[in-house]
Length: 128
Image (cartoon, rainbow, N blue to C red; front, top):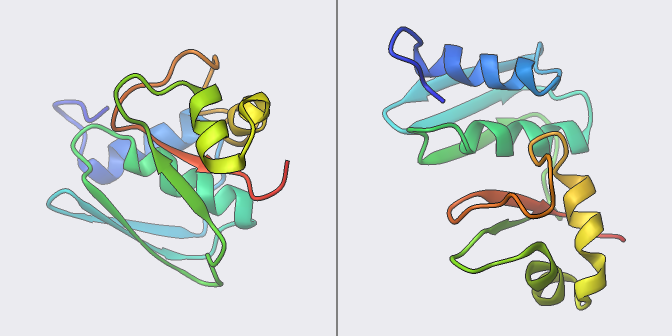
């Protein structure tokens, strides 16, 4: 959440630190409601989590991934009204029972499988 005294960059960096995500080699800049991320993430999973965490900060409308390497194959889902992780798993992975894989793929941003909200963006694992 962007505080009164925080710049958008500071708010995002604070969120990443609070979540324990290593973004020391990622350059984050904000123009309006758009975040541009350059540099290099530790690995693909960390890259995806950094993108998600930044995009879920209040006031951020869009994240541009300009980091080194490919983000090909990355699947994201925007939570809609009345969505559950089970429903998302059924829609994106073919089985409601795979909801736990989505939950695990979005830790530490998610702290409980039932605590998701409309507009939140989740990463969908490609293998579960």
